[in-house]
Length: 156
Image (cartoon, rainbow, N blue to C red; front, side):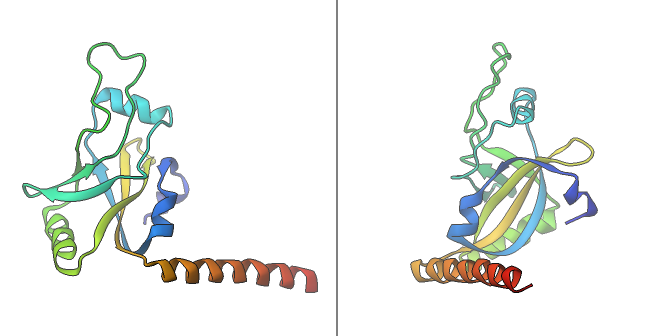
C-alpha cells in the first residue's frame, strides 16, 4: 500500500472477508464507474459483503457488488448489481487469473474507497476459504491477545 493509505476514507468495508478467508495478498485496483455510481459512493452507500472478482474475456470484473441507485439521478441511473470492470495491468490480470485457477484461491474485495486524487479504488485480496476449526483458532487467538493486553495494563 502507498503512503496515501492513511488519507483514504473507506466507502464500504468487507468485514466478513477477514472472518471467512485467509488473506494471502492485497492488490489495489481502479474501478470503472458511471456518474450515478460515483455519486452514490460519495454518499457512502455500497455493499460488497457478497462480492467477488473474476476474470472474464481477459479482463477482471467485480461481480455481485451492490451500489444502490442515486436518488437524484433521472433516467440515466445505473443497474445496482451490474458487473464493473477493474483496472489493472495486463500482467497482473493474468497472474491473478492463474492464481485463482491453479491454487483455488478467490479474489475478494476488502474495501472500496477514494484515494487522495479522488479516484475510486477497490482493495482486492487473494484469499483462501477458512474451515470451521480455522475460524475457532483465530477467535481464540484474538481473545487471548485482548486478555493479554488487559493483564499488561493492570500490571503497569
